Length: 298
Image 1 (cartoon, rainbow, N blue to C red):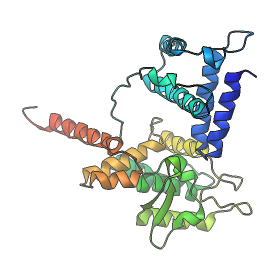
Image 2: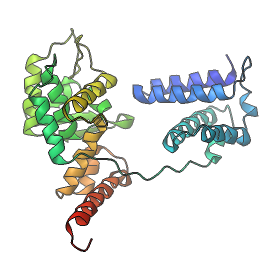
Image 3: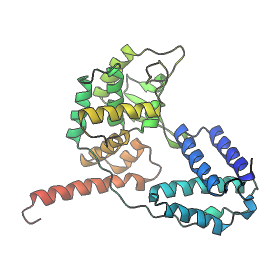
Image 4: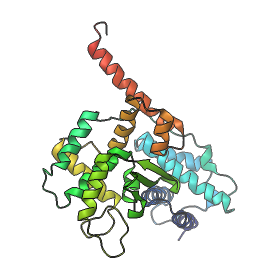
C-alpha cells in the first residue's frame, strides 16, 4: 500500500470514529479513491506526499474540468481533498494544506424546484389512500407526513429512534449534520399517521429505529428514497420529486405564509442564515411568475 493510500485509510477511519453520517463517509471514500487513482499510473504507485505540489493538484483539478464534471461535483471532490490535507497537516505528515490554494469552481446559482402546497398535499393524500396496495402503507404515509411536516433530511428521518418521538407534545428529536441535535414540532396529521404506523410496526428484537424495512430492521437512507420515488412517479407522474423536495416545500411554504426566516433556520438546522435565504429567492421567483401572468402591464 502506498503512503497516500495509507493516509487516506487513516483519514477515513478517523471520520468513522467521529461518527459522521454513512452518506458522508461513502462520499469521501469515493472521491478520495478517485483522487488516488488519478495519481496512480497503470502498474505504479502514486508519488510520495512530499512530491504532491500545487501544480500537481492543479493538474488533477484541470482533469476534472476536462471530464466536464458539474461544478457541484468538483466542489465536493475538492472539499474532500482539502479535508484530507487538513488531516495530514494536523498529524505532521505535510506542512501546508496545498489544496486550500486551489480556486474553488464556481457553482451556478440555481433556485430549487419546489412543488406547490396543493401539489404536495394532493400527493400525500393519495399516499394515504393506499392506491398502490403497498405492504406497509402506514409506514409510507408516516414518512411523507414527517418529511413535509418537519422539513427533515431523509438521513435524519431514518436515524430517528422511538425514544426521539414525543407524541404527547408532538416534538421530534432530530440529529442533523455534525451530530447536532434539534427539536422539531409536527402537526396533528403527522401525529395521527405515526400512531397508526406504530400500531402496525413489527420490529426485530431490540430494534430502536422508528422506521423499519421489510425485515424489521432500520430502514436505510436508500430504501426511504426508493419509497418516495415510487410514490412520486406512480401517483404524481413526476420522478424528479425526491425527499429533499419536501424539505424545500416545508421551508418555502412557511416563508410564503409569513414565518420568520430565523425560525425556519432553526427548524431546518442550518448553521448559517445564508443557507436558509435561498428560500426567499424561491418565493420571489414565484411572486414574479404570478406578476407576469396576472398584471396587464407585465
